[in-house]
Image (cartoon, rainbow, N blue to C red; front, side, top):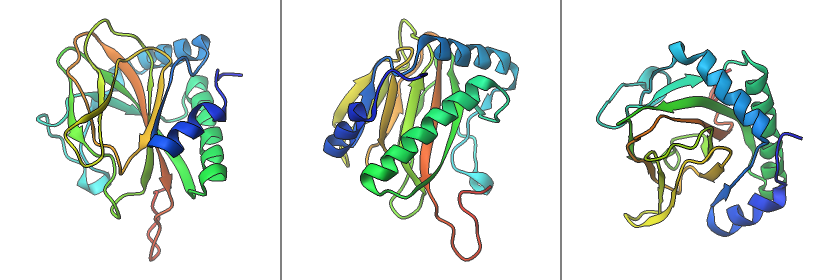
Length: 206
């Protein structure tokens, strides 16, 4: 077992409030393996963009973190993706959500890096349903995740990055931001997506 929690830990939270925070979600060995994987591919991190595919743009006024999309090149990546697939199956079985796949990338924040307040999905314009964040290390300062109340400037919850903590929230419902990092911060950002294929256009792309 690579996880330290069962469905009962997060299903009630999601049904009641639309998000969940699971501390010590993964065994320490897997978290350490994911950190080692980050260090392995460290030279290949690239500046994160805004938007998807042909609409991808770099805007350093909005975000300055660096990312590396999972490519299945390590056992740690494959193990983490298998855990997320299991969660996807549970969410579909419990809420009949029609989640189709899961995509994710490593995210690296060095001193001063941030991601301004944003939504990961807009109603009717995206196939992202649930956002996930897994923290891989515990920086002394900075890099907190701030989740806002729906359609509000009021803060719902502020989450300090702590190794092994998994956060999940509804992508269309909660705007959020990452406060400027002080110490280096590694995480995995991911999204459970529904199948939005229409008129022969495959979305998610294969």
